[in-house]
Length: 421
Ligand code: EPZ
Image (tube, rainbow, N blue to C red; front, side):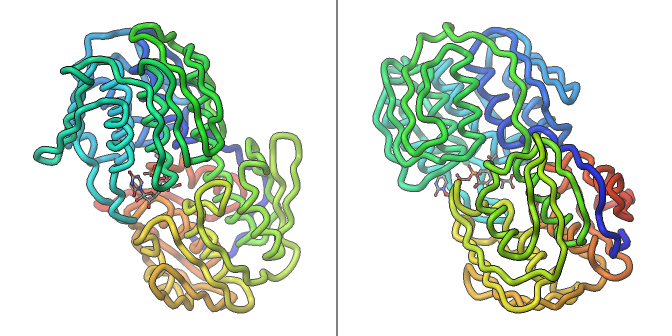
């Protein structure tokens, strides 16, 4: 891409990846045929579909629609080959052991941004009576008494975990009696899963708050569903920051201010104008960017999935800002690449101290994970001359047609195929 063009026009936001993944796994709780709409065309959706097919369900991906066919002849095993491609595959564990009494799921292992253990997922299943064994890189889970039904339980999370909360909500949906989950993740994607489980016939209350109640139903009793996925607030946040960085005037359609409060308040402190217009947010940047400090936190705090993008914005501000990452222990992989583009950032433990430099220089840079790659694209949009972002397969995991959407609002950007892309 060639930087320097202000973005102007309208961007339509796709469905939320982090809502679609658990909801696709929830189809395993019912034997009937389910349909998801507004599903983004992403690699992670394809990987989840491949996993469901491997388990024994027919799946048709025809974005923005995904159809999961009826079926109960399931082999409850998720192999390393599939799980290693996408950590969120762990989300089949709860539904499988709840629906089929046993499951063998590869441990996801660590990833570029951190160790990412799943101890809270396993602790919760054990509280519901599951026997859990870790063996040769796999979780072996079995319902009480050799495959019996899970029991409702009170589960306290030591740390709010998004997929942990989702996994145990799904397990509790087929457990005997009531479950109470405490210190839950409150992300909008968790709330969305609660809506779908209610549609399937489970009584779920409190999704989106830190205490969730689930009253389980008998196996085989859950209905299939037809559901349109909520818009992707992180994709929306990424385009808000891109527009603010280039100094344009963009309407981001399908974005709710209420889902992005922490980000919106920080953008306003930085001098960015944001206003709701129907189901859209208009973003403008009339003047110079001001430095702002952020600390990532579970929702409704500042989302860690927006940290890298916001850090790029602070590279353009006049003055010093401090970015503190509290969720993942290794989520500054974008910094050395940005330094190659002329950014002035000092890393100290889980903190990045950014000295605004006003402008960046084009360079060839390497993406390391999904959100880091989005931050490098934003840096390239403002940098002088050419920037080449390599390993964009990271980007394709979470951003639908990013270069097309950006080009539509004036970015000089194109995808170039090469051995690494
Ligand atoms: C979800 O990951 C998202 N992924 C991540 O988005 C997001 O960054 C993260 O939540 C935080 O918001 C999906 O929804 C598919 P966590 P998840 O469990 O659920 C620790 C993206 O860019 N922890 O909420 O894996 C963990 O190590 C991705 O789209 C335990 O210690 O994150 C971390 O420090 C990246 N034990 C913290 O909790 C556990 O059992 C929060 O992680 C579980 C988590």
